[in-house]
Length: 89
Image (cartoon, rainbow, N blue to C red; front, side, top):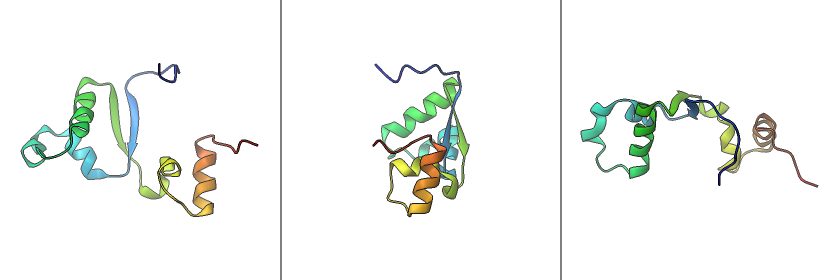
């Protein structure tokens, strides 16, 4: 069903790992990365098809971390605000 939100293509995907971006954008790395999980090859396919773009964001600015990591309160509040999250009371 999905989120049913309008979107335009390509959809930017903000990543804090420059190696992952290089692997997804450059098929020459394929021989070195045959052991990598299929999900990363899926990303490469989506980049090649123009569905997504991979853009670098420094780790300290990776607001999605609020959804995946335990953070210090200051970072948690900053990233929550950036994502438009609020406490449900």
